[in-house]
Image (cartoon, rainbow, N blue to C red; front, side, top):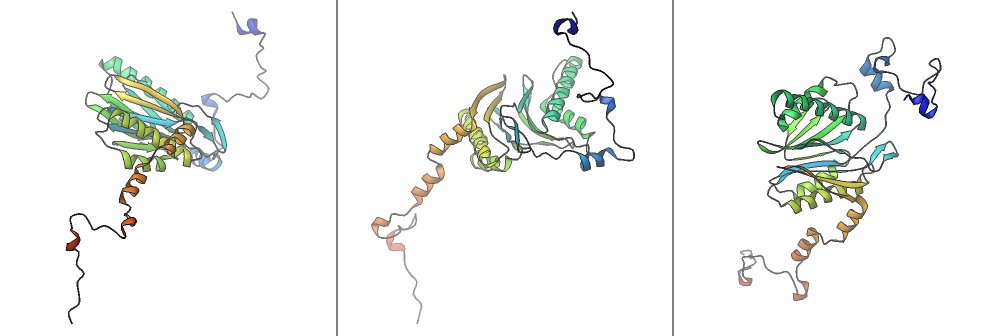
Length: 289
């Protein structure tokens, strides 16, 4: 049954101005303009940001991100999903232009599926990262903005790669991408250990994203947490970023405990001698007349 018969819809007049975007072949730049220069000069300049992170440890790979999608000073969506599954053992964080990230992850899913049908097995995480970087490098300079961390588990164990739209492909243990990444790195660098337990890894990822959403205006909403294991990826939790930050502020910090332990006991009338020295060993040298 046609759409016109169901809801009495009438096709718009093709002679009038259409509110829809033109087809792929309808895009054109003015004569004499280079496409790259035209986009840089007349393209929209809307500020956007995010906080995504991923780190590798002995029990797999942790991926976490906030859920706020911003467009300038406007919050476009407070509950967007910035961690996209590719297949059962591979997912990736997204940072940059939302449309570009979603489009290229669809392309990656299609290419990996085709290679699995040809070769009988899925490519490794390194192979998927290299494939994505090569495909996006062809569009270098055309205002494509995709920054992603591919998290997966293959035959070699847990793996983590950073891929950027200019063709950059890096392997590492910790990556944080987005406008809130400097704040997230400050938490990760102080608490990351490769041999940490699963619950410690969960707490570290939540704390890093929560503190970043506190300081970065373009990050917020909720904190999504994923865990890639040998059996596949798992969606662990989703917590409100403000509630999570408020709960973290109530906990006693390790810095405060260290300061209390290092504070000298002034009730005894002075500082205690250094460790390893007896009170009689502290002698003040006198000048020889």
